[in-house]
Structures are given as C-alpha cells and as structure tokens.
Length: 425
Image (tube, rainbow, N blue to C red; front, side, top):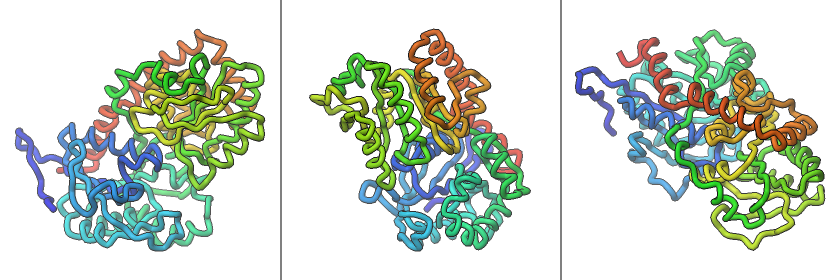
C-alpha cells in the first residue's frame, strides 16, 4: 500500500492523516458516528488533506471488498476482515484483525498523525500501540464511550480492560477530542485526565440539506398518514434512547388528539424493538410496519408506524414530511439525528441528557426537557398548538446548524488544532 507524502501545487506538504475506527460508512446500523466520520473525512479530502481510514467490515460482510484500499468519495478506505475474538466487549467481539495489525506496522510511519475513534476494541488498541512504537502523535475521539454513565455499563468487563489497555492509551494520547462541552467536562474530570482536550462537534454536509425531498413523499408512502401530524423518532431502538418516555408521553397525547401519529425510524438493537412493540399493544394502540417507499394498504387505525433503518435520502424524506422530532434519551453523547432534523427545518424536542442540549437551549433552537413523560407530553402539545413557536425554533435552529455544525467549518477547526500541535510540519 502507498504511504508517501504528496505535495500541493505550491510545494507545501499535504497533511496525511489516518483514521482508525471499528466500523465505518455505510454501516448505518451502528449509529450516527458512522455517517459523521465519513462526512468529516470527505471534508478533509476536499481541503487537501490526504486521509485514509482503517476499519473493519463489521455490518458490511459480503458487501465490501476486504483487505484492499478503495476510494470512497476521495477517502482511501480499507475494510479489514476480523475475528470475533474475546467476545467480552459485545456481540462483535474484540474485532481482532491480523491484517490490520500488519497494515499499521508497515504503513504507520508514512502518516503525520492518527485519530482513533472509539475505545473498547482491537482497532483502537492496535492503532495506539503502533503509534507509540513509531512515535506518531495520536488523537483519541471516545465518542461518548467514556462518559461516567457509559463507563459504568458492564463495569465488571470494562474495568480490567481499562487498566490493562485503555488507561495507557489515554495517558499517551497527544489530544483528547470531545464532541460536546458536556462530554469533555464529565469525562476528563471523571478519569482525572491530564491530556490537552478540545471540543469539536460532529458536523453535517449542509448542501445535502439544501434540496429536501417533497413533504408528500412520506405521506404518499404511508396512506394512513395523509392528514396526520407526524412525530418522528430516529435512532437505534435501545432503552437508552428513552423510548419508554416517548411511548408514555405519546399515549397521553394520542388520547386527546386523533390527528397525531408516531413514526419510529431505526434498527432494532438486541431485540429491544420487540419490547417497544409490546408497549404499543399494551397501550391499546395498533401499529404498522412498512419500509419507506413500499406503498401500503395501511392499518388505517394504526397510531404508530415502524419504518426500520433508513438510508440518507430516505431519512431526509421522513424529516421533510414530519412535524416534530423527538429524542428523549437518558444518555446521548452528541445527538446527530437532532442536528439533521434541525437542518431539515423540524422543531426538535430533546432531553437534557443529550450532548447538544446546552447549545440547543441557549440558542432557543429547540425545546429541552427532563427525562420524564409529563415534560415530553407538554412539549409536544405546546409545539403542535403554537405555530409561531415552531417558526421561531426553526429559524434559530437553522442559524445554530450553520454556525456550529457545518462540516466545512468543523474540518477547518480540526486542521488548525492539529497544526498547532505541530502535526504535518
């Protein structure tokens, strides 16, 4: 594999970065980080950075070529095959990859720096190890995995691994990069880290949101939604997303209004979707299950619709056709779906446990609630009834997204910080 420096037209050496991440685009089922990191890497490439990605084919087996470099929109990506070795950290195991180890060993010296996304996996451990071996600076982006709440989950598994591997990796990182002030404040103090820390949010490619699908696409796909006020939840179906809060609040609202409908878009995680469907039936409501684009004869009396996982364009069609976006998470590192919804002009309701809640609240770009059903019910009711408030939130949200979450600005900020660290000189 090639690992030399390229020079621009002005003779200046181009910064060469390696991103190491356990799973990558287009494995959408693994959350917003997957899309966010590819969006960032594309922006790097457009700014003249030579960017490569080492990842695994987790979620993409049989869909991508493995152990060979390929160009994805200007980003050089290698999906490595892996073994589900030591399945103590999750269903994907430790993601041990001999091929990735060899690539890191043979090619790492050709990069200026490495940024490592996530913590509890072999790709992260191997990248940190070889970076230290070859004295290459590495940046850790924990993506919420070191939040006190997240750390405490399965602590009996994580604590030994933390002391054997992660603690050393953290200690020698040139930079800790967090996506929100809340993550930086809680994680850095919780682990008593001494590293330099910066806060750089995830971003979105604004031009992708400048020409949205028509509002009618969603309603044409689901006949039973024609004249409904649609409340949308988008994300993986997990308990931590606050779906119990959402269902309880929605039941209260649905008893008062026959014109509301709840749309749940996302993939099931660990069978939790079955529990959500059971809650819907216990509440005495019918639900429909239809992928977007498949015209249905409808369950005309359905009050909840499950769409399954959506690709990017389908997600935009759902946002464009909905009326309110809701994310009542018990813990959420960032809130990528909320940023996307705001970019689509949707008024958003998020809990105060979502990483961007401080920014949303301070800029009056959405409604921030406590993690309980009565608060969410009142917020949904007020937004449905108050047209002027929805307009105000939409305007403020658009400004917030343009100023804070434009991926071009995010990538530029990262490059400046890396240059300040002496990377690429």
